[in-house]
Length: 72
Figure (spheres, rainbow, N blue to C red):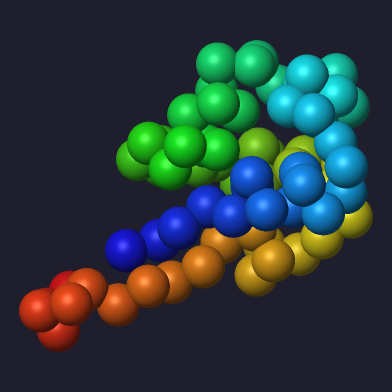
């Protein structure tokens, strides 16, 4: 499973979701979907905008969590 760590990065940077939306030009509802880990996909352009606004790398934003059953 891929976990989006957007909520942790926002707290770490003392930033609200609205501030991030303003900084990236991304819609609040799309950011909310990412923040709550309900996204099924992410565009590289979105990932690039988030990394630029949050001053982070994709590895800071995305986390791989192995499935408990060991199957991919």
